[in-house]
Length: 192
Image (cartoon, rainbow, N blue to C red; front, side, top):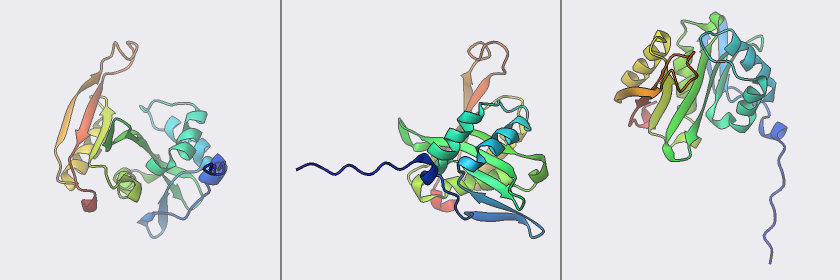
């Protein structure tokens, strides 16, 4: 007796737009947080380009994140449909209790609203991440905004924050600041 093969699901079907997971911001300027889809890929690419010092990857990479890694990424969209915030990351294969946050970006129009924290917490509160109790990322020593975000997350989650150098300038080709590995946890997801 053979086992039936599950039908193939095209990426476009996996990434159908959904309703917002959360609505944040002010009543006059709401922002909608949700899982990304293929239609968000170019907007994410444009957002990252507008947020130095973030490293800009290819538009194709952001399309893959928006479709293949959508359960562990989040976008924030304004009422006009513009992508104004994005967080990408994944649950580590070799440490399934750890979420690695790759990039976080907030566009100029949404800065100062706490959107970066809300995007991270929207992802961390998803049922797919119930077994995650640590968050990791890398931050350059001079990225004060990112250091502030992760210190605030650690304080909100009542969890320790540790860091160490992870990639040296030499490992990054000699023209990039070193990256420190930052780890928050353990934390309880029901606190988020």
